[in-house]
Length: 94
Image (cartoon, rainbow, N blue to C red; front, side, top):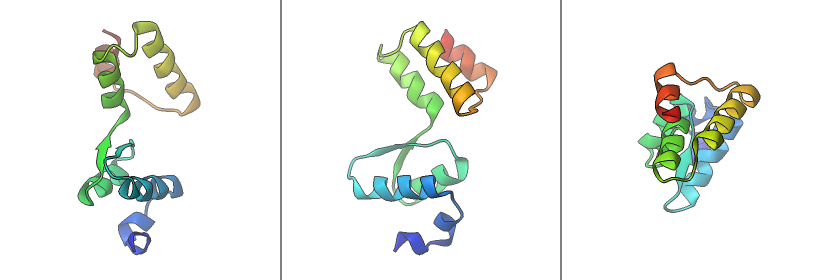
């Protein structure tokens, strides 16, 4: 049913699968950064969080120290070509 939705078909295969899976698993939270996918997921009732918010939550919970945070950020930048705004980097690394 959901796969026939035009908005969902406009997303990449990974985003489509992630949203479909999140709908199947009650109480799940989808970690996704694609703005279009995040808006669609939210509009159909999927709880979503983006990478900076997830990392910030890990920092607040004491799950990541500064070194681990730096390593994750570097890995995301180098391997996934993820870019952080400078104000977000400053917050995560403070």
